[in-house]
Length: 209
Length: 88
Image (cartoon, rainbow over all chains, first blue to last red; front, top):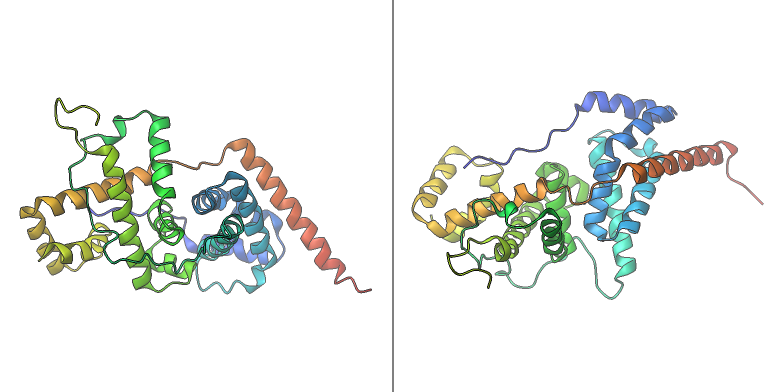
């Protein structure tokens, strides 16, 4: 079984040059950074907040904050990792505002140790994506990921959807590497378990349950 | 290798982050443990489905509006900085 290939990101040095130009006051360089990453920030923000308007606000606020604090960016990490950290904090802040009754924290742990142990071990249909039309599939994927605690959801989105490395995810979320790995494993297993309810191979003649 | 040990290493395995020896122990386990094989295979599919899902793509018109809003707020910010703090 082959390893999952990470998404490809642009070379760092060329990007750092844009950042330096932006730091010197060249707004066209900053605009290029916005164009490069606005889609990613929007996806991350909507995954965390689960709300379209909040995600739009997060995109604006995160870039504006990055612009205002560019002088403080030390260039020890990639610009994108620094931007993601800002965006995640903005998104979590909005989520807390909408759900004040529930503590929303990246440190949130689920009580039992067994919460991620696989329950559904039935194999999936050879083409699970073809079992549903596109709208149904999107609905299943959205509802399934919404059910994860925000701390797990965020790690999964950064690592597996956006393709950040474990180290970059740890930097962006200010978590240790073992903490990222443990959340990622549990997030992946929980998602897998929940998706299995939809995608498992149906015995012939069994039909819909 | 037991199933619990396999599960602990699953993320490293899928990310290609294992040394050769652990990887081969894990693959030996996968060869005879059908449940772990299914868990591993469907976890990999889970990641791929989400990665390819394009769940929250930014529509072009909204993207244009957001970019304009961001850049105009940035210019306003720059002007405020240049004019310095307003003191009463």
